[in-house]
Length: 337
Ligand SMILES: CC(C)(COP(=O)(O)OP(=O)(O)OC[C@H]1O[C@@H](n2cnc3c(N)ncnc32)[C@H](O)[C@@H]1OP(=O)(O)O)[C@@H](O)C(=O)NCCC(=O)NCCS
Picture (cartoon, rainbow, N blue to C red):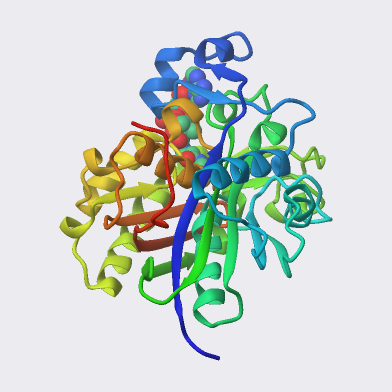
């Protein structure tokens, strides 16, 4: 196997048109706009239509990518979809997308389950596949339709989540590698703190009835994230040889602004240099980081040459971080800021 370089050359995103505001939620559960903004920083979320699924959001994100990339996706040879809300347990969302996008030469199609760390994991796998020479052009999606598994009678969770999708292309390159360093960590004993109910509910000592909805102990997740994500970021920086001051943009998983603030403070990464997508989209799980990156591009913040630290974390409990050197394909375009 011959080692080559892996470069992120294009990006595209999509969110459904239907909005669910804090005021809409006031009509569903005992909550209010002020509480939600003060505890989370979230104002509204996007909600998919009843007949709109994760593969539909991914296809729309891929269409956005294609309109900005100006080259064919015909020669994509692997599709990776990071999601916790696939259309079906099987067939994979990635296989559905191969058909929807008409990528006839795609040789591989897999779904990846790493909750809110899924997009960072997807990029990491794509880098490994391209750098090893096994694949040359990989479409990586981070996408979720969490509204479909959210309990809209539970005020502690339903105020947090929304739907969205992001797509990036990772290609073999002779000159530029987008990937500088990575860090992963898993604490499986925290699995009971955030999960979707299912066949094995008894495992966590809570005999729910397999309703298929999201259950969360927000306080425990919050405590874990502030501690372990800050430690993980430090390990990632140590591995990379860069200091916090060398990072142009920090793009953590957009779980909650009140969670991101202490992580920034502990990590020495200023909030002003942080990209997040939660204010208008809520916590979109695997989609939250690509949505934040694309907002950064559209707002004229994120530019070629920038060093970006992306950091996903969530159910597992898992975390995955990457230090990236951003440099899209020279032909790639984005809407004016
Ligand atoms: C969920 C979260 C916003 C709750 O905020 P919090 O400050 O921890 O709130 P608590 O759970 O301590 O609850 C405080 C009070 O607010 C109440 N409350 C909870 N949700 C509420 C809501 N939507 N509206 C109004 N009150 C609410 C609680 O019932 C509790 O009331 P009590 O003191 O009378 O019992 C917060 O814990 C969080 O964001 N955790 C991380 C979750 C996350 O990011 N998960 C995804 C990881 S990928």
